[in-house]
Length: 157
Image 1 (spheres, rainbow, N blue to C red):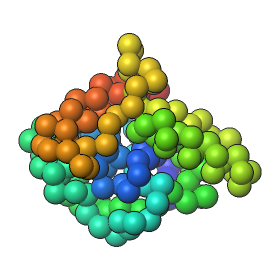
Image 2 (cartoon, rainbow, N blue to C red):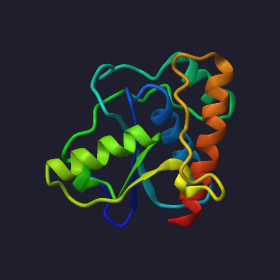
Image 3 (cartoon, rainbow, N blue to C red):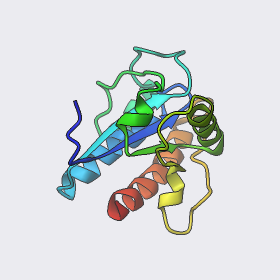
Image 4 (cartoon, one colour):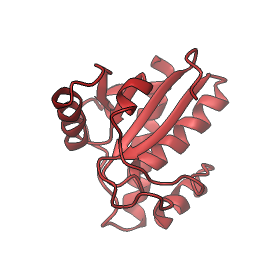
């Protein structure tokens, strides 16, 4: 159960095997380094990969930068997430639309839904591109943006 004194953040991407696990891993490391009491999790808009580890390319890209995401397991966003998390953050505009629609149609708690890059100065409105169909450079590019977004998020909360 979450400690309500801690700010909680849910990162969301499509299958919860690339971008959102990387964001969770980066956020956990940055918050620990800054000694901030925060709780992070990640989920996908669908359950296609439920129970699976992150994509090996995401694990490798994260590991090269000192983040350990290998033990995370994919899951889908649940209705309960809208009452558990203080902030729900999509990796791209499609995820944000999906989250806002799910929240509003199901009349769930009005938790703030944002894009990760909205937290980074000068990059608001930008998507973290899906690296799944790309090469190692696509994962590095996504991780570059995730690091910028997470840094802004943690410093602003």
